[in-house]
Structures are given as structure tokens and as C-alpha cells.
Image 1 (cartoon, rainbow, N blue to C red):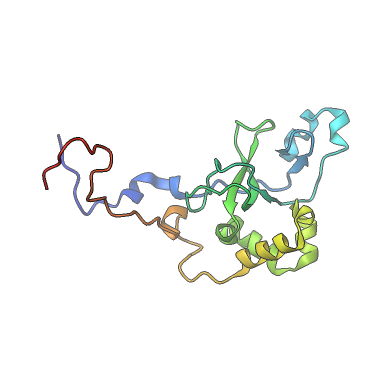
Image 2: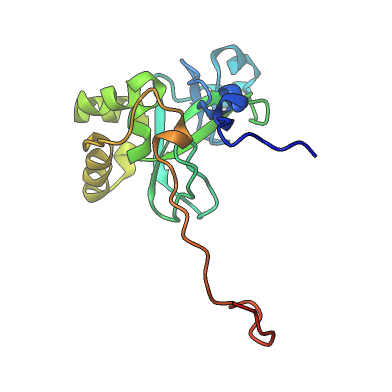
Length: 187
């Protein structure tokens, strides 16, 4: 078996896998199916539902319904009931060919070519105009969301791949043998 050189940069092998999916512009939001609909797919939405499509919104925000979703920026789980921001991206698994890319509020600031940060910097009216679900948040949640997105983050670079921008810290291996107390482990 060949050995792997120690100086090999594995991120180079990954190619574009460290990049976030591209933001899908000009989507409408179907409130009945809770799905984003790309412009070319609107004709596939039932006529009765087309009237209810929400247009001219860019993002959506909500409390995470479970702890199962993963932030696509940092790779960490998004805790249940914590605020998350999403944007539509092309994905054939979605009902109309688009899915939501979820992120922690703080992780979202550098996504979509800075469009999220720009939206938050533009003020309250911009947030209400461009983000689905913003007006449904309590005042406290709105403040928390704005602070999470707008606060300065020294370590995050807009050019760094998502997983490299905020690397996860691994805990050192345990010296005790907690999984098998009946067997003596030599030190």
C-alpha cells in the first residue's frame, strides 16, 4: 500500500467541494409546500398556488425545528430552536429543483457574495422586504439575529472555503477506557 506524503494538502484534492452551493436568484417561495421555486419552474406550480407565491424575497429565517440540520458554512449542527438563515440553491432533490441552504446566523454573513451582510447593513426595512420569516420573529429574536450577522468576526475570511474559515476543534483522546471497564488496558 502506498503511503500518503505528510505535506499533501487534501483541500487541493477536494476541488470545489469546500464551496457553498451558488445562490439561486429571483426565486419565488411557495407557502403551501414551503419550497423555493426558480423562475423557470413557476409554470409548474399549480395555478391555484401561483397566486400565493411570495416573490422578491432573497432569504428565509426561522428557528430550527430540530437539531438535525447542519450549517453549510461551518459544518456544525444547528441547535433546535436556534435561529438559522437559508437561501435557495439549485438542487434536483427539491420539489421544484431548489433546496434551502441553512446556516447559523453568524456564519451567513459572508455568503451569497456578501448579499446577506449587505441586506442587514441596509436596515430594518430591507430585512422585512428581503427575508421571509423576519417579521414573524419576536423583537428579541430580531435583535439577536441582527447582532449575530453584523458583529465583527476577525477569523472569518470571505475567500476561505467554508470548512477552513472556521475550523472545528477536536478534543484530545481520553486517557481512560470508559467503554470497557471490565478489561484492564495496559498503560
